[in-house]
Length: 246
Image 1 (cartoon, one colour):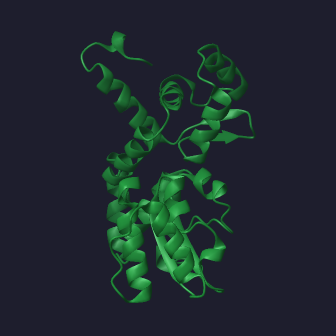
Image 2 (image 1 turned 90 degrees about the vertical axis):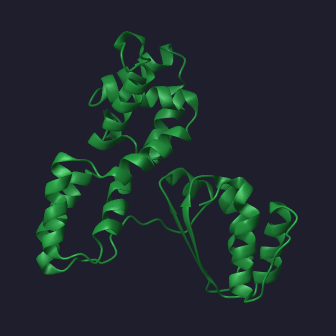
């Protein structure tokens, strides 16, 4: 998904594809949004908006249900659940491409689910990577994952981290280094003392699937985000641990 300065280009591509006529020279994203609503409001469409990381992307490409004709379907993929909540989507799904999986893949699926530990991002990336591969290739991939995390998952986690507010970044690093498995109320008190506004910060991290809060009591974190957090902290001062922020 392109950033804001690429929205006009995406609007032009969307209109051109659906109208089957070249649309260009849209002045700005606001003009483009108005054009999408005006030109597509009576057309039944299927639109896929992939890898969304900013609410404005949804607002300017699919602002409301009324922008498209009756029976239209808009599919949005994102690692930030809060974006879907803010845009009032009808339903959210976290799934592999086939359900249930074929019988001879079932055992491997349990291994993948165990590795993912409830991290939607890991399921999406691994599901795409394994789709269409043989059962033997699945088994080989699972053996590899036991020793080496999937590179793309780490990359996407890093992108998700880079897009956060500075205080949320600090909270993420604190949890990765010190507070995984700790009592939420106690950690909230500590982070509040550090003026990190943890009530909203913890909610943001949970929406981004970077942490899990069990029964509103215990803070948990998948191994992959934790390893990402450790690496970010190490990068801050590779040769002098005492100068690291967490």
